[in-house]
Image (cartoon, rainbow, N blue to C red; front, side):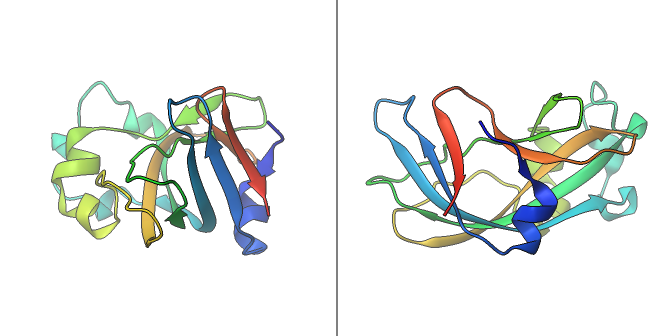
Length: 151
């Protein structure tokens, strides 16, 4: 997949076509990325409830915000977007129960998993744990068979 700069994706306000043809039914979304910002630990309620195996204090949490429309024929939750750094290391969005499901932070920031109905617009956020270093970041997909193309 071609690297898509997070900065370009947000500043251009462009729409992207996401397609996952690796599933039994092809999943398609139209996606526009709106924000990529660092999360302060003070924003997270009961931060001590986050799974201790996540080294969150050794890195930085970033929130990727986007709007999307499910162009598939059925409802789905299958949207797999990752972040890649300058060294081509891939970082998938976090799935920690407290951080992304059970906290007020998760509810405020649209982190909870939902089923996207066809033809409706949604606003969604993903959270990533990234190394505590300076880098440019790029959008990528988690699996072979997925594509993300600017339209």
